[in-house]
Amino acid sequence: DQLKKLEHVTDLMEEFGKIENVRIGNPTDVKEKLKKMALGGEHKLLVISDFDFTLSRFQNEKGERLSTTHGVFDDNVMRLNPALGQKFVDLREKYYPIEFSPNLTVEEKIPHMEKWWGSSHQLIVNEKFSKSTIEDFVRQSRIVFKDGAEELIQSLDAHSVPLVIFSAGIGNIIEIFLQQKLGAIPRNTHFISNMILFDENEQARAFSEPLIHTFCKNSSVIQKETSFFHEISGRTNVILLGDSMGDIHMDVGVEKNGPTLKIGFYNGDLSDQKALDHYVEVYDIVLVHDPTMNIAQKVIDMIN
Ligand code: TMP
Image 1 (cartoon, rainbow, N blue to C red):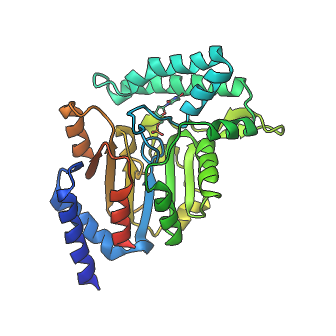
Image 2: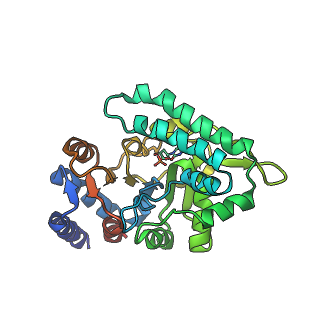
Image 3: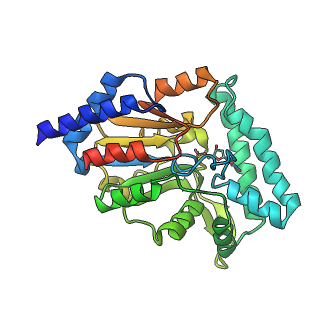
């Protein structure tokens, strides 16, 4: 049985080697991790995933950019109240280039990210958006699952493998999106994200603390006392899914001594070799412009 599992690892590595948009910087290392994970099986497995442009698609078939969870407000508010919508767009145009600037360090970026998230959340709270309005916004949004994302979430649930969706976006929007697409939130799925807190009239009144932005997705924002972290304490093997440099430390809050296999979606410019090289350096497996969850699903199927 164990031998068979190790054979599967060899087959999988061979298969990945033949897929054009799969980049693996250190195949020996990846193979070692996969072996440990295959032998550990589903009871040792935990999946930690980003949401925006990781579980959700970056662009549609026409190459048009799709929406992040925050983007749900930009689009819908623009339609209903252009002056306010423009404020969200202005924030994004100001801060997005800072988030991805190759010329600034993370330390230099952080105060700008705090300002972006703070201003954006303030606009949402000032407007007192109601829960039902937000549900409508999500229904009309351009958030689209990657191909196979629904099946991936459901297959993890079927095997009782916990899935932590760790997002610097807005957790309620993800919950509503999953509810609308899957009919319910699977029992295995947990959120670490910014949550809109509603008042007794179901109107937005504040955001949860601590604020989670792109560059603090690590143990500093995880409340370890919650029972969920006891539930996952025996799970030493982690598959981490992300799309940005801010996602690579999402496993830091988990107390474990097993491997983390980092799978990164590269949505950037294909001609930017330096950026792509950087992804290959920090992620074990890099998927270039991949609109599917196929590779992650293959790894999970191999383990389960
Ligand atoms: P994430 O991929 O780590 O969940 O990051 C969320 C993305 O949301 C990040 O790239 C910045 C973006 N964002 C917006 O598009 N609009 C906003 O108002 C804010 C605060 C963030």
